[in-house]
Image (cartoon, rainbow, N blue to C red; front, side):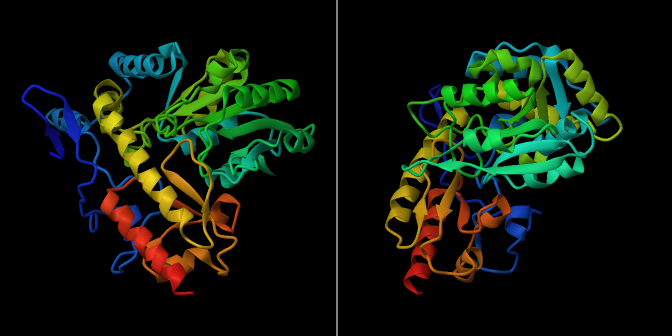
Length: 392
């Protein structure tokens, strides 16, 4: 156990600075640099153990001797609906939930369900790399439009460019909110304007809100698009999962929220015989996370805010690097354009730090750094990055 009871019968705290060796465990994140001294700070997978409540729930489920095909129970759906109501004041009917083996498959289902082959799906870049590839796999033409960078460094939608990019074949708007990789937490006003643009163009909206529980800002909260602009719900598919918030990416469990019954039928039909249901233990983990994970989540956010402050100060002191203002996620977006190196990712790998290449997200002059880790690990990565820059 990695949590510590402060006093008998008192509150529970979690030690997020305890370092646990993940090498040799089949970890995608760590096995990328197997047999090297490179510290992996790349893929969106926390180096922080999941909540004890989740592992305990899975252990209990393992005592049952059957792992057959499993569907969501009433209590599983109720856990999701209760969590949405508690976190976002959003009342969702269990009938509006569509279960998925991940958010990316859910994006594919939207692309497959909406419009005709060759119709367009628009999205704003830089963005999570699957947005570039999934539309084509769902029979749609990907149409990227650059985000606008404000004088503060914050990234937001370029509504004029988006409007200009629309054509008679545009059918889908793909959103990522909170935004990966820039860390933007879109305001209610920004979301309302986006929804109104889609309304005017008669587009279906796919809103990937998988990072909804990872808000760093202490003055703002994530507001689901369905809450920011309720009038768009008939054209909206919202994707969510506990995978990022509760570090359960390997469990492959997500859900879509679709109020429009016709759109929901189209979506389910597109999934039929292609996408499986989540696995047995995935449902167990999701229910435990949403029902019993609050104390762990509160501790996680405090830890991420602490790491973010450390990172922000350290990057500001590194010549050639700058960091976009972050309001959400644990993925820092680093501008390397003034660094003067041809291959920023390779440069830092040579000095022992593995980061995500910005080119994968649509900007080759950036890198993405995952700071959801014990603080000593982050400190070591920053020390190596500082040494690398000094050695140029």
